Amino acid sequence: MTEILKADPAGIARAAEFLLDGKLVAFGTETVYGLGALATSDAAVAHIFAAKNRPRFNPLINHFADAETAFKQVQTNELALKLAEAFWPGPLTLVLPRGPNATICDLAAAGLPTLALRVPRGQTTHALLNAVGQPIAAPSANPSGRVSPSDAFHVLRNMEGKIDAILDSGPCSVGLESTVLDLSREVPFLLRPGGVTLEQLTPICGVIRNPDDYATKLPASPGMLASHYAPVLPVRLNAEHVEPGEALLAFGTPLPGSKLTWNLSESGDLEEAAARLFAGLRFLDSEGARRGLHGIAAMPVPRHGLGLAILDRLRRAASPRPPAGGDDDLEASLS
Ligand code: TXA
Ligand code: MG
Image (cartoon, rainbow, N blue to C red):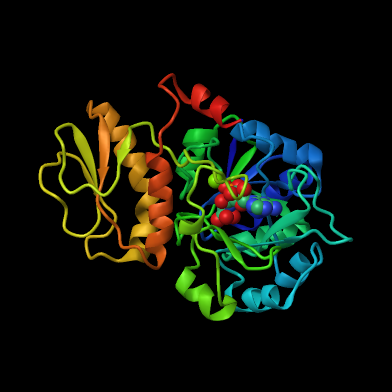
């Protein structure tokens, strides 16, 4: 059974109890809902991989209440300290070499010599991290390869019965995942565009190897599998018209001709669009399928700011997938 916990002191205490007991709790962050387990326990973290059907070569992000605690796990450097100062708590994940005193378990790191660290924003998230007093490993709380959850209801729909509890702190304010920046190489390497934009990072980092440098078939990060964030209906990118039988994911003034539309942002605001992206994909997918539609046409989104993260998710949602046959087939192909 999956308990739904309120974001009040009793709910937070119960969530912490579950986590300390090695159980799985989904919780809200400013980006998306995470599927949390005690990051120091291989046994607890193993439940995450099982519940998500996630390939074990794909490492997890470890969440901390503050930068000081986070950096105890790694070999840090000046740039990491500056970025933490500028963006934590917030939607930035830093990948750094594992330190000699690291307590994060091997499974959370997928056996890699680096660790991914993040200090998320949000009162409830912080209360939970403080109540647990240990790092929490948490990928997005969706089945592997599927659309990420930006509210507790999304988590419930996908994970009911597979996890012990959901701590409901309402919808996520940013709505798409953290930016993942690898600082373990000579030049900072953007593994995943996200809530902190390249324009925000560049003044501090200088040169960053950028997503378009590595948009190849070879994943730079184990999690950069091509097909990801995938709704069931196929997605067509940069649509300039709507074909019969297509639902429309609009940005700005909607294209004519669609009977089912979700507008990311009528005014063309990228923050609003990011926050509405995953809910929109889920809506068009379920409602479109119910009405017998056969695809989703996605309008162009600007290639700057949060637009890069939105386009990254849409590109993956549109990537070729294995032949139809249901979620199980898709997930098997990702493992
Ligand atoms: O916003 C977020 O980042 C959310 C919330 C819950 O914090 N979490 C999230 O986790 O999106 P997940 O597991 O869906 O994505 C983590 C990404 C994956 O692409 C993974 O491969 C990468 O981070 N990653 C984790 N550890 C890594 C490492 N040591 N080296 C390279 N990539 C790593
Ligand atoms: Mg994910």
